[in-house]
Each structure stands twice: as C-alpha cells, then as structure tokens.
Length: 158
Image (cartoon, rainbow, N blue to C red; front, side, top):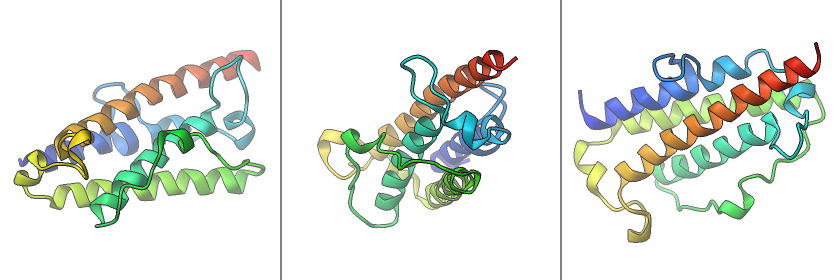
C-alpha cells in the first residue's frame, strides 16, 4: 500500500470511521451531540462546536491546497465559529466536516508517493508528509478533548 493510501486510511480512522487508536472517531463522537450540547461551555474550555469548526478549518485549508489553491488559513481565525443557533446549523457544520474530510482522503489517496517528500506550499511548512501527519495528530488531539467535554456535559446534566 502506498504512503498516501496509508495516510488516507489513518485520516479516515480519526475523522470518519476508525476505532483502532482511540476506539472512536469524530463522526462517532459527534453523531448524538445536539446543537445545545455543542454550544455548552464548560469552565474556560472550548465548546464542542468550536473544536469541530477548528478541525474542519484546517482540513478545508489543506484541502484547498490539494485542489490546487493557495494556503489561505491563519491560526488566528481557526476558532472564529459563526454562532450556531439551531440544530440545522449544527448539522450543516457536521456535514461540512464529513464532506471536507472525505474529499481530503480521496485526494490524498490519489497522490503519488513522490509528493510526500515535496515542500508543502513553502519550505517553512516542511513536506506534504509532515503536514498530513500533523493533520492526523491534530485531529486526535481535539478528538480527545471532544470526548472528555462530551462526558463532562453528560455528567453535568445527570
């Protein structure tokens, strides 16, 4: 299996359908979260909605590069979630995360192995491999946060 195919599999595991590393994934964790729960603030932690937006912000930004565009994302805007004021808006964010993630994985699978060692946009960002690995690790980091915040919300409402 090529390196891009292996990375696409790992990416899908954390976002869409895997259970190997964390015994869960974004889609699984978020499937039963209501928009009220997604917006629930626990102390000074980010909300589930903010973390969902944040991870999709980076996925969409890298996806844009995969599709031939520029790297337009900036860390300072990665938590600029527009207000979620309905279940429909929450579901739209979840659908965007799913759609962007599937496109990301499909384009990644189509890359040649040689692309992994090429510079990603600018030398300061390293290689494609480094950025894709970073995206997967970043997703696991926030998946853990979401799982814990979700447990805190459920415990709070018992």
